[in-house]
Amino acid sequence: MNILVIGVNGQIGRHLVQYILEDGSHRAKVLLKNMAQVAYFNEKGIESFVYNPNETIEKFVKEVHNVDALVIAEHSLDDIMTDPLAEIDHTINLLEALKDTDLNRVIHISTFETRKEEWIHFPVYFRPIMIKNYYVDQWLRLSSLDYTIIHPGELTDKKGTGYVNVVENDVNRGEISREDVAKVVFACLENQSSIRKEFKVISGKSSIFEAINSVN
Image 1 (tube, helix red, strand yellow):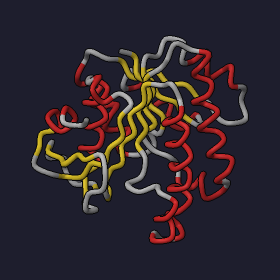
Image 2: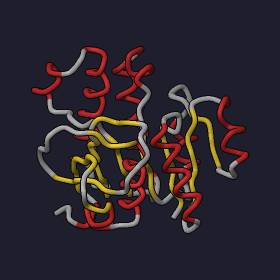
Image 3: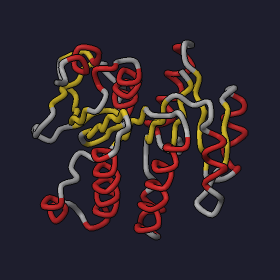
Image 4: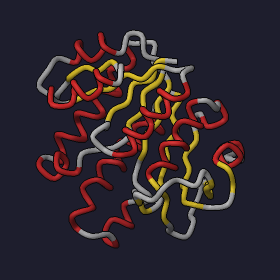
């Protein structure tokens, strides 16, 4: 499987790409917003391309021609704070462009909470990314894509344990390491039972494989 990862500036995207490399049965490709990181990924033997909102959507479509799955690993909070409407529009434009490709599998790492009634309960600086995820999640739910929407708990840089708690509805807000979120994404890519599913995930006592299989 050829997997395109968007959001590799963050640690979740970096961990995911590393897991894909180590597994060896899939290939990773990354979308970058500028040339600064091209050398880093070239050294690892990972194909990359630079694409930004000012370029034609046809360039993006061409780059995903041979891609089997798309992972939106992380959104840039700086970009969202600068121009939230433009960032929402940019991401949805990329998703809409998939209709001109054979790519149908999309995994979106959202925020733990996106419901409108909950926005007011979070710090002002965090609300723009919740709002963006709300609209991206809504678009995916209404699409015909084979999506998975993942709502991780409070992200930490702790070493992953490989054990999580996954539920479709509310769960007490807890922590989860970025390593384990990346492992959850990788498990979803290899498990068709996660298609058109949405769930919350925090650290827990079930193996990631078991937890993903338990999602109804």
